[in-house]
Length: 360
Image (tube, rainbow, N blue to C red; front, side, top):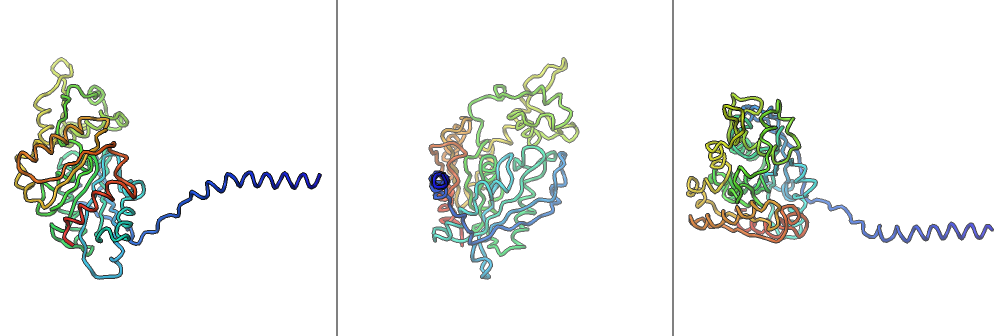
């Protein structure tokens, strides 16, 4: 009986071991960064002007390459703009972008550069990378405060040819807008699946937006979680600001007539489109665009919002028509599954692009 009990215990351990061994064999050691990510803080004066209670204490995540601590060298800087509803932690911990950069440097596939991820969050959906007296003067924040702060505190090559801006989704739109607005600061831009490069194919009246809840809400919190409705309320705050119209402090694409009936306001629609859609600004910024050293953007063919795909195709075509040299690439995938990882597009496309064009 004792031998039988011992056999049962032994058999159970072997049985458990059969399951433990295969799983343990898949455990991968955590990558040890050669460079390091540090936290810093900037106190913004520019962002004090707003109506949405922005926190003027902005956190910054900064990746310093391996050679930074052991040398006195100066380095190019790449600024990253995160998308709406995201924050710097998504870029650092979820997408692990500094780790991708670090691995590429360790393999001698990339030169060393400083990588900066500022906090563009807000009480709404986050920055739309515009100047608005309602939702904040974000373009001024980048130009007047963020870039000078980094150049003064870190060993950077403070030259436009050694400074690039990249971003994803709404941050991709921001990267393009900042580069075309400030070519004297940023000479290189790569936008990852940018949105709002054009109007797509649907008229504003066809968008699935609950304008009634926007007009009846007593605070912004009442529209949180409403998807596209919340997004377009924030778009109106950025591009149709009205500091005398609480609680949203903006005008809207649909307004109530004298009978209280919601109707499309064509004047507001055109004002919003002219400011939000980048293709509407091409004639104004054509000289700036032509002066940039390198422009690239790509987009995923299977974005569920096909307006983004169509807009990027047309945006590339319009850039060609006005004589702006650029790379415009459509790839198989959606906007969320192809950029990150050891074999993602940041590693295989963006980093080679930066290494080719940045002045080291």
